[in-house]
Image 1 (cartoon, rainbow, N blue to C red):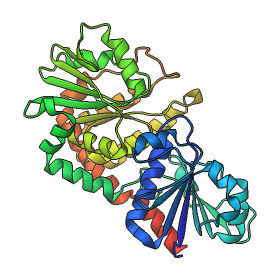
Image 2 (cartoon, rainbow, N blue to C red; image 1 turned 135 degrees about the vertical axis):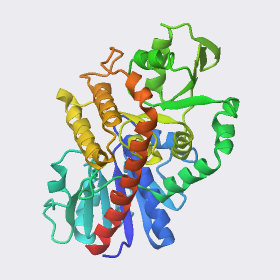
Image 3 (cartoon, rainbow, N blue to C red; image 1 turned 90 degrees about the vertical axis):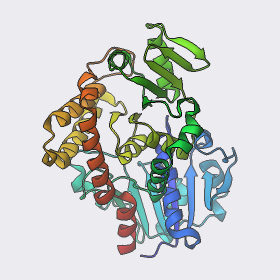
Length: 388
């Protein structure tokens, strides 16, 4: 089926993950089809989008780089003037305006429910399953992102891959842009983007590694957590948001646009990330990572982390690097073993992770290649639509 127009609906709840995925999805489809396909993104609110893109304005309708961004409120007020696209993506089971949906049942061909990312094995059975909606023309299907070739994959966008190559080939340019004080200095650098977390175990290990360490702390929750922990050390705040203690330098980074964040995580040595979109970006860098998964009731998030670990091990066990693989997967699990987001001291121990860092790097590099080649959601989604 030809894609004549594409509407993407996103309901932002309490973080940047949902809009991050949708924003990336819209940009990538625009890069594929250019002016051939009209792309609209419908949002329940704009606060997070305004942060992700500094050119965005707090208005009901706007067009940026050829993509239309429209609020649900604007759509509701002007519903009589809107014709639904022939292809609709409903991100993460969000609510589509009833008036729009009633029109779509008669005028549109395909509605795709793009679900949350999961490594659990059951998603294979649900992926591309039809979901009846009582319409004669419009058909709805589940599209399940995951870490296996038999799932919907993850967003592997060419825009990110091109940016990755630029940073790798021109690191000095990006050091000058983000870390001018570290140019030509031998620092072991990591990014921290997390929910509430006690970073005491991490700092204790870095103090002993005989390297010059730098942690780039991003996001309000990460920075608030780190500031509490810094009080237990004698970190000197040498300037606003910059702290030094022995062999550790900590920088509180300003909020970065999506493209800037991608540049930064490709520049450093390792990345601690949270949520879904940032996690996939970390995987694609090929660098060692730690994933702080979104907390769920009754610790349901541990099923998801265990699912990812199982998929991760399936790909990498043939490399015969058992010790680093065990170290990395154990730390992933311990890092996420919690029933609430707090500064309570966790079970994680980073010592073996950093001892095995070079071998963990080999694992994450191979895994990034696997994700890029076998789990490209954009390609899978586009092929599904075209074959429909």
